[in-house]
Amino acid sequence: MNLGMWEIFLIGLVVVLLFGTKKIPELFTGLGTGIRNFKKAINEDPDEAKRKELTALPPKEKESL
Image (cartoon, rainbow, N blue to C red):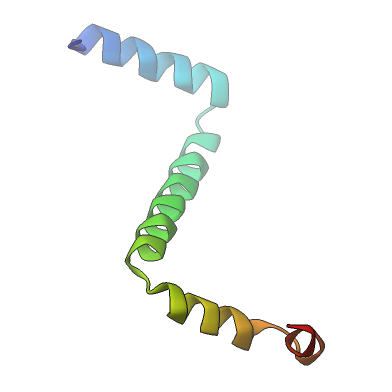
């Protein structure tokens, strides 16, 4: 399925009408942050992630684990 220039323009117009021009940069910022966090989580070692999680916990929660 190939999208032509008019279809892309129409989709962009609908997005602007639905969200407004002020919300679009916020949406793309959130999308970029989500993609960045997803890539970081994929490349991170699971054991290292567990250690980071434990060091971030308050002392009371560490004792219960």
